Picture 1 (cartoon, one colour):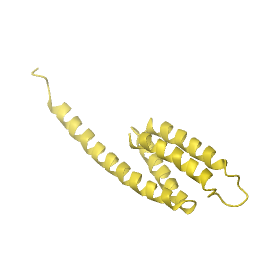
Picture 2 (cartoon, one colour):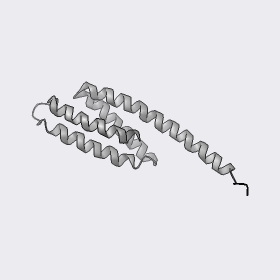
Picture 3 (spheres, helix red, strand yellow):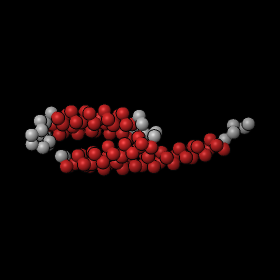
Picture 4 (cartoon, helix red, strand yellow):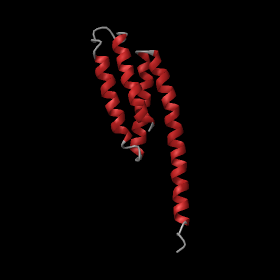
Length: 112
């Protein structure tokens, strides 16, 4: 869910890179839109795989990439840190809830 919500912000971040012409010299500003759109698609695809351990790790990789994009536009580092904190909470709390639900299901026999 966090990665899904982050897609909108990443796409808008690409528009910011375009509008502010924040990409390095020699790179056309419209690449900001391409990067933001492509990265948003990658986040949506990754959100489908967070049920696997490698999907969670891939989500962490994307969080790191967003923080590193702060070298292009510092606001993107803030976005990466905020969404990284939300992603950390979601993965930790989600794992705890999954474990509790599994224990509850193992002990529940539905009166049989």
